[in-house]
Image (cartoon, chains in turn red, brown):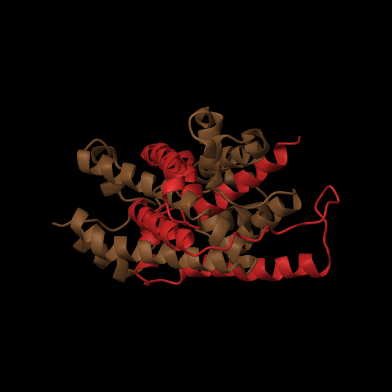
Length: 137
Length: 200
């Protein structure tokens, strides 16, 4: 039961990603070519509702399901890591048309070539951990 | 089951769910998923699963970055498993067979210039078909893309879910910088590198 809520939320996430076509390479190309509103509409709607929701949680001190206060962890202050890391990720995102969530949703959908992307994404994260101390942050 | 025996309300709902979902409905659902995770005492960030997997397979013995209590993050691996099942359900039960993505005609034209045909499904065969996967170039495209995604997301400490959705919702300046980065990388790949990879 402890895990069931995360499994069901994950299933909902997978269905939304697939049915919104956000897992499609074509949609990501269309986005990076600024030729349709679709992806901007999806992300924009989520962020707009997200900003409102976070503000409401703060304003009314809404608690989580166990009654604990909800904290939004501020991101560590830095510039280089976000710009450099973000750019490297963006290169990969536009190449296979998938960010980490959609990679696994695609596998479930039946695009098994994404298993290769998934395995190498883990390898990429390992390389980051290996070279972490030598990189500017 | 013969759809004739479904009551009209269920049929209408099935039709609504089976079509591609609109941007506003999809965006609303993503916000709902993010707040569900927040309500469950966690946060919405998918790429940290990659670090958790590295830790779970024992790489923490070699690299300190992966030496942490990965079991405390296993809720997110369950979420990942759910995402795979969700993709399966969307394909098996909530799709019209052979439905192609209706992308803009300008994109279809641009992609034709790269030798990539108009959509016949969600993904292009030129990248994800078996013929491509078993060619050296096709394999390298997928492998290098994976490396860039895994390395970049951890370096930037987040991906689309952690930065573009969760971070921007919390008005985080670092997330805004990261999203600028996503677009710098994405535009370089789209306009400078893809033409080199797929040149005719």
